[in-house]
Image 1 (tube, rainbow, N blue to C red):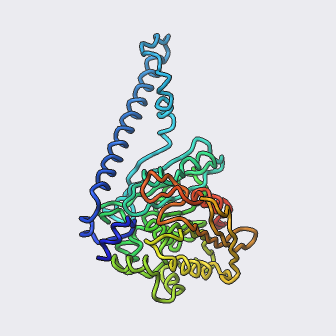
Image 2: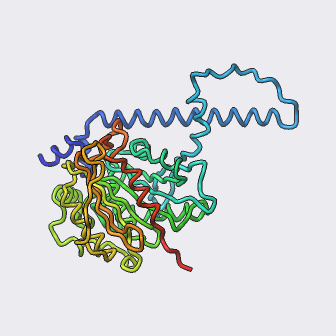
Image 3: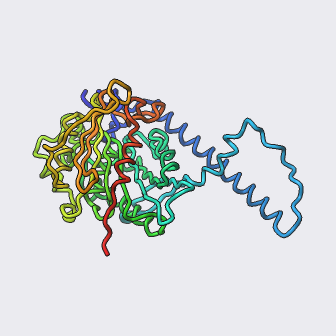
Length: 381
């Protein structure tokens, strides 16, 4: 009964494979609709690209013929602009983290970026979501256009988890740790292209994606400059799917400091890992105790005094109201905690038309980028 109740409220959390039969049919329908939309979009882009290539070939070295095509419909202005924007969104699949491990991802690159390499923001979706869902719901691509950073959206496979949950709840070499390492390998692959700034790599996620974001940063602190965890479970407490459910509801039953040390790379104590923690106070999927324990964990890792956190309220009495507390060092935030009074288990200030994204609360995407742009990883040499 506990599991059925979790599904009714729509938790993006991890469940045993057999629990997939409880999934509402509308989720399957939404997924098929999303796939069809993407397929139609790809066909349009390819047709447009082939048409432009054909036009260019026919006019090379000769007097161009008068176009036989009809004038464009002024009402189709938005569609006419689509081919110019779509190439920035790339869908790929890669073999990573050993034989047989395929990681799908989408990459968004704005037209304008830093000449010395763009920052790279990795976004990890929650359960029952896709890369496309997460991009639409968070509106992170629109922010990337304005701020000049690239966005990488790894996507979990349904063969590894029926509801596309990243397996943060199984921190083993065969499951969660392997997924974290595959994401890190993908980041390194992109950095090798020379298009991105290796000192400005950030990882953010929602719910199960937040749990995996923590693992990526903790295992690869030399690669990740900072993490942002939205509606995240405490690190290191779960050891299996049912353990994940219990952790999300009530947090860790053991002392949390030792739990995070157990999954952290040895270099982390020297390098540190700045963290932004966001949580809705009305979140019944991930209990508030998780936020308190996460705060203690990251204050410990970064060697800052948790008791010095002082909370202040922003935009009081409005839909954007939130409370923020932060610890700074050297002029930059090291641990920042943001709580949203009216928010449930959803991405704050997102597109409410997309499941697990709420229109209530401040814009989490803007808050995350504001935190990240103050962080850089010092590179060796």
